[in-house]
Image 1 (tube, protein in one colour):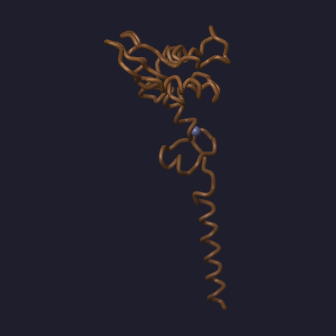
Image 2 (cartoon, rainbow, N blue to C red):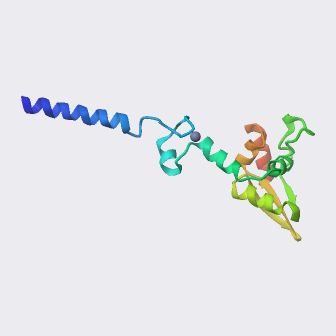
Image 3 (spheres, rainbow, N blue to C red):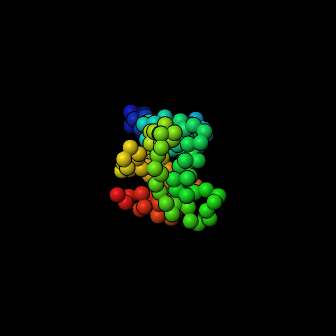
Length: 145
Ligand SMILES: [Zn+2]
């Protein structure tokens, strides 16, 4: 009887330990947001912080190129953003496009003579301020050869 009780007690203690440190309990990122344990184990931070890190690798003006690539500028009505998704890079912008590609916001398309087309990725579209719907339009354009 005594033995059974203490075994039961130990079982409860084990369960308590599991619930307080286990993967089922949402963990928190350093920024204070709840994040999936898997995200934190793999990347050490939440998705928003990972995105912020990627944005932080860009230089001033890089985002303007991304927005220009998508027609996501004040010159165009916001409902039309993403009506285009290509940017023919010139030498001046090559470094900016390299950073945008490295951060995952753009990808290289086909070359044209000494130049190269670039297209925004899904996350690049969202970063430029496109809605999910307009991002889908822009991605279908970017997929064209
Ligand atoms: Zn975070």
